[in-house]
Image 1: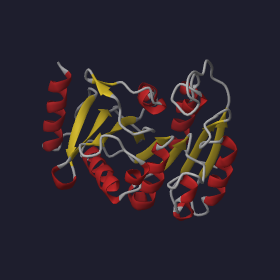
Image 2: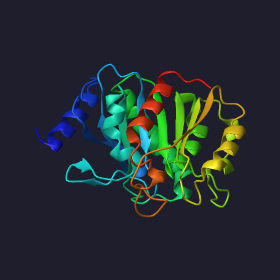
Image 3: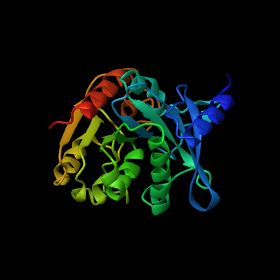
Image 4: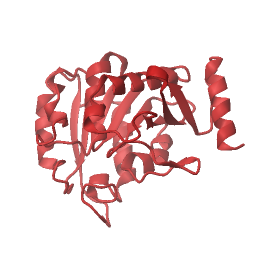
Length: 257
């Protein structure tokens, strides 16, 4: 069965209210003003939760040759999340915003798109939904959590944008209003100037209303290459992906301080 056949089958199953679609597939959802947004869907039978993974940079999943090809930490680690017993959704970019910027990530339009994706996912599974973002994906997750927190089980911020020099950074949003469980997960050696590990403490302290909150800082990994703000460096948890994903999945299953 080709990826296109799987996608059509998934759309048909969702349309008739079936909780099917066992094979990974690209899902396309109508959204604002005739636009659409896609997500790569990886259902897991008996899943304890659904994670929507939001990549950094300009967003998206690097879709090519019928597969997500992005090197982003969350996108390349998708199988690890699925192996932890989770449904996995990789958020693509909407048809009218192929490259997201921070202004878009905190916009009502972005929130509308993600809400439509969540609605589509809920036609397929009743598992609680968590948002997991990395790098600039945490700008999205913070803003989305503020607007949709009554519809989410919780959020995870990995390699968060910590610097006040970024207008829409996590600490510059109204995160003191978040009531959801929040996990902050960072690499101690993250050398990106806008995601410094020592600045995560300020985010943690600002989460004054969060029902449960946790700050976890990991060491280890190996062979970082390239720009320290990119996916194959400590910023992208290079060489320690399996441990990071397990820590996140364990916390999602049992959020605790």
